[in-house]
Image (cartoon, rainbow, N blue to C red):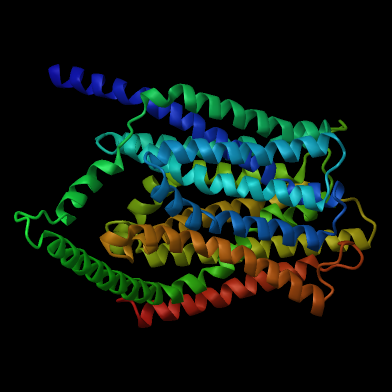
Amino acid sequence: MAAADAAAARKLTITRPCILLIAIAGTERFVFKGVASNMVTFLTQVVRMGNSSAAKVVNYWSGVTFVLPLVVAPLANSYFRHPHHSTIFASALVYLLGLVVLASTTLMGAAGIKTTSASLFFISLGNAGYKPALQALAAEQLEDDSGGEEDKSAFFKWSYFGVCCGSLVSFVQETFGWGLGFSIPALSMLASLLLFLSASRFFVHRDPAAAAAGTTEMVVLPSHESSGGDEIEVEGEEERLLDMEKKGMENIYQTGRVVLRLLPVWTMMLPFTVIFQQPATFFIKQGMQMERRVGSHHFRIPPAALQTAITISVIVLTPVYDRAFVPLARRLTKQDKGVTVRQRMGIGMVLSVAAMAAAALTEGKRLAAAAAARREMTIFWLLPQYILLGLSDIFVVVGMQEFFYSGVPATMKTLGFAVDTSVFGVGSFVGSLLIFLLERFTGWLSDDVNKGGSLDKYYWFLSGLSGVSFILFVIFSNLFHHL
C-alpha cells in the first residue's frame, strides 16, 4: 500500500507541469497548422499567385522553417542563462508578431506578397526557437520520471491533436473569411504565451551555469608564489587555448566523418520529403476542382481539412503498429523490434510510392471526368492518398529519427537531430526546384489544372522518383549494412 501511495503521490507531482506543457505544445501545433495547412489557397485566392508560384512559396517557407532551428537553437543556448525559458518567451513574441502582421494585413485588405512573406518569416523565426525549447523543457520535466513513457505518449498524441484541430481552421478561413481565420491562431498564440508565463513557477528549470562553474574553476591556474605568477598564468592560458584548438579540429574531423557516413541515406530520403510537402500544396489544388458539397446543403469541405486524415491516421494506427504489427513481425524476423530501422524506413518509402500512385490514378480519373463534362468526383476520393501518407509517416519519420540518432556518437546527439531535421528542410527546397524545372520543360503544372495541366503526370513522376530512391536504398543497405 505504501508503495502504491508513493507512486500515486509521485504521479500527482508530475501531472500539473505535464498537463500545462501538453496544452502549450498542442496550442502551438494548432497555431502553426492553422496558418500552414491552407496557405497555398490563401496565396492563390487572396494574394493572386499562380498555382505553381504559390506551391514554391509554401515549399520555400517550409524549408526555412525546418532549417532555421539549426541556427537559432545553438545561439539561444549560448546567450541565455536559462535557455529554455528565455528562448520560449523571446521566440513566442517573434512568433506572435508574425501572426499579428498576417492577420491585421488580411483584415485591412492589404495582404500582398511582401507583407505575407515578412509575416511568414517571423512565424518561422519564432517557431525555430519556440518548438525545440519547448520540447527540451518537456524533456526536463520527464527526466527523472519512471512513468515518462506514458507522458511522452500523451505529449505526442496531444501535439498531433493540435495539428488535427489546426487543419480545421480552414473551415473558418473559407466560410467566414481569411481575416478571422488568421486571427484565431494569433489569439491562440497569445493565450498560450500567457499560460506559459503564469505556469512557469511549476516547471523544473536546470541552470546550465552550475555545470560550467566546475569547468571554469579547473581552468584557473592559481599562483602560489608571488615571483613569476603572471608568467605561469599566461603559459597556462596558452596551453589551454592550444588544447581547445586541437579539440576543435578533432571535433570538426569527427563531425565530417559522421556526416559523410550518413549522407547516402540522407540523400535517398529526399524524394520522400518532397512527397511530404504535397498535402499542403498540390493536393489542395486537386481538391479545389472536385465536388466538395456535403449532401443537399451548401456547406463545402475545404480541401485543406483533409490533412486531418493524415494526423488521425498517425494517432489511430501508431498503437496498431506497436501492438499488432511489431509482435507479428517479431515472430517472422526474430527481431526485438519486429523489423530493423532500415526495413522500417523501406516499408514507409514503398507506402509513399503507393500514395503518389493513388493520387495519380485519382487525378487521371478526375481529368477524364472533366474532359467528358461528367459530374465532378467527390473530394473523398482523395482520402486514400492522405491515409497512405499517414501510414508512411509512421514508418519513415520515426525510422529516420532513430536511424540518424543511433548513427552518431553519444556526445553528438545534437548533430543527429540536425541531420534529421535538415533532410526535410532541404527536401522542401528540392521540391521548389522540381516545380521550377517541370514548369520550364513540361506543361504539367499549368494554373488551369483541367485544360492545360497534367497533375497526374507530376504525381507519377514523384512516385517513380521515390521508387528509384527505394531501390537504391535497398541496394545500399544490403551492400553496406554495417554503416
